[in-house]
Amino acid sequence: MPPRKRFYDGLDEDLKRTLLVQMRNLWTHTSTAIEGNTLTLGETDFVLSEGLTVAGKPLKDHREVVGHARAIDLLYAMLDRESLVEQDLFDLHGAVLTEVVVDVLSPVGRWKREPNSTNAITPDGRQVVIEFPAPEAIPGLMQRWLARFNSLSAGSTDEAVLAYALSHLEFVSIHPFYDGNGRLARLLGNLPVLRAGFPPLVVPDERRMQYLRAIAAYQLSIPGFPDVKQFPANGEQEAFVALCASFMDETRGYVEQAQRLQAARARPTH
Image (tube, rainbow, N blue to C red; front, top):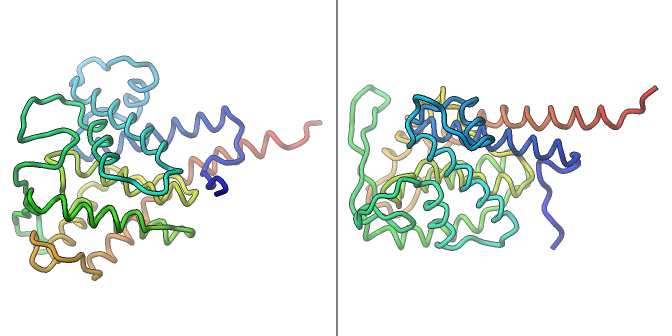
């Protein structure tokens, strides 16, 4: 099988390295910031590039960005694989969850063992509890999720966004881990995007509320949830797909900048 195209194809090695650093920094910063990490984009770059800490910032936040960057490396290593298996998800979870807690009910690199839930705000402003599928349902649900995920392919931008959105929505609705589900969804959803030759789709942290409410709206629309039998295609799903499409611009801008620099190097000098 010929190698798949990559978003950095055609770039000199130094431009490729710089572009990958930019993607790593932005992806890591935005995804961890959505979960409450306090490091700025500049501080994230400093921690990852220099291996040093930022005075006054929690050690937990430093560990989170290092772990997320390591998970990105793992994801890139999976690009040429035909399919993912359960252990791949456990490996990514182990990279993202850097806080070592000795608790059999909060396992790292294993499915959750206790129920979990979250608070959500409905479109009419009410607070509701969203309870996720029970621990005993997770192995079967994730077996089906993996089968659907491994069947995804994308050629166009629209197909890549759709693959990202659907795999993301289903993963966070199953909520298979005790923690780290959002970060895992934003990583795994990008695998078909990257395989299609596009840069990763990142969720801007300043649009966190819009993003989280769109997910909650979809979860509240699933019949019989949390005893989910199937994931519906409906208006809430379409709204999330459209929202994800609007998140592609920033990373695409970095790619276009690198391509302009590459093109300038190719021009003859006088």
